[in-house]
Length: 349
Image (cartoon, rainbow, N blue to C red; front, side, top):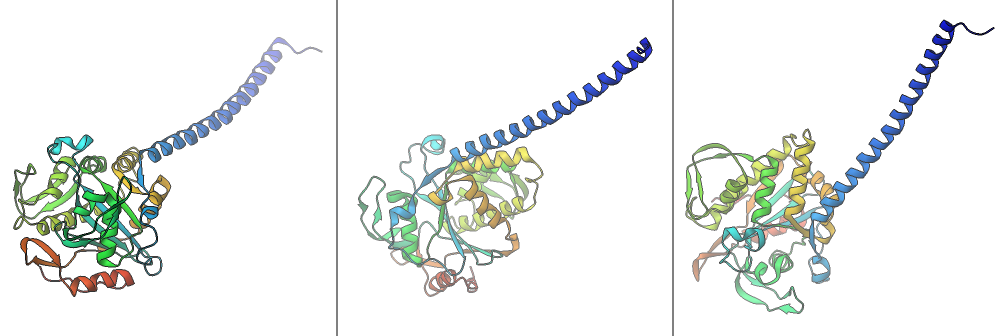
């Protein structure tokens, strides 16, 4: 007995629906697989791009074994340098200024246990005995007595700055990051600016900075002018600028701690892209994986658990525009960093 036309029609529709469901399941299954593959491949491509942004220098091999011992426990010391190079994209900030100096030097000490951190600013005008350093093109740079701290970067880049800081402090530097003007500006813009309270009007024509008292969200160019200004705050010395830089870093830390970046993957990628493009690191930090691990470690420290300090200094007798480390206060500070113990009370400013 053959099915009637109506039965054949119903049977065809059921078969078509079953086939359609199987086809859709196949499409979803294979399409989902393709989508996952696309996401993975896309993620790998982005990961490789970010890795490719990073520039590195092999400081450990260049300095060799003649260095202070590593710190206590799992404490970590990171040197952050701001270069005033006018090369390449930085030419607009004064192409007539040759060479490069470490405009900013911050020693970030992450305590064992990863719950507390200290940030020590070393004034660039500090007079030090600079040791011989590996020269960028081979050989060695000569030692120099009564040299400004920031000249170490001029003669031997971040490697010589590490060597000089280790010689004056006895603190082993585990990692190094350096950033130039353009990189700093791009990073601040990628974050979306930094909200900061300005305690008094700042007017500095040398850094093109005009800010009124009050709270501002500083974008890249303004933020760069703020951390560079000397003549718009205090007595025009580097110490006044350091205080302003530390306040800016505290505000930047709060921006990251607020967690808005995690909720915005597009902006998070822009920050990652800007950060990796801006940085030159030591070889061990020269990958997205290593930087991400460090970022997670630093991110676990609450902003209120970061102690900002400036190396205790006093005027240099030979030139009041220069400073020297003020012992025993400076000696006690370095000892606390080496031993990973509580920092001594800050000196009154």
